[in-house]
Length: 168
Image 1 (cartoon, rainbow, N blue to C red):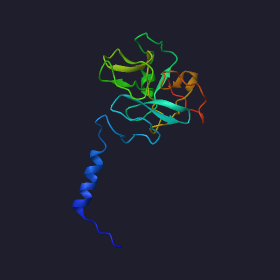
Image 2: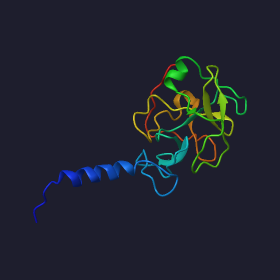
Image 3: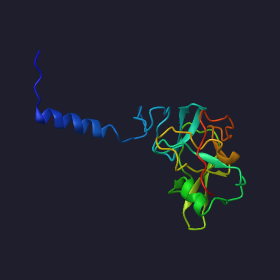
Image 4: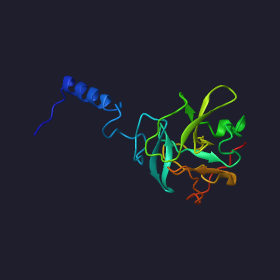
C-alpha cells in the first residue's frame, strides 16, 4: 500500500497534536518529563525518579530543599551566587496549585518582592546542574540539598552518581 503526503491532512494532525498540549484540568495531559506521573497547570506535581516518587516543578524539574532554611520562617537563606545555582521555584499567586503533593503548599515573599513556593514551610529550589526534567544531580550536594517527596519530607538517599559541587 502506498502512502502519499497530503498537506492539509498533515497540518490538521499538527494542529490537533498542538491542541492536546494544553490542559483544561481534566484528562491525562502529556507530561513534561518522561517519568512524570501527575501533570497539571499547577506549580508542583510528582514524578518517578531513581529516588522514588518526588516533587517536580511545572516544567518537570526536580525540586530541592536547603538545610540552611528554617521551615515556617517565611524567608530563604539562599541568596546571590546560591540563587544562581539553585533558582527559587516561583509562584504567581499566594496559594499555588499542586497535583499529587500531600504536604502543605504555600509561598514566601523574597527580598526582591517575588514569591517562592514552599512545601511544609520549606522554600523550594531547582538545580542549575540538572540538565533535563527528572534529573536528580543536586541530591545531597555538600550535604545540604535534598530532593523532596510528595509529603514534604526531604529524601536523604545517596544519589546514584556523584553530584557536582556548586558555589554558594
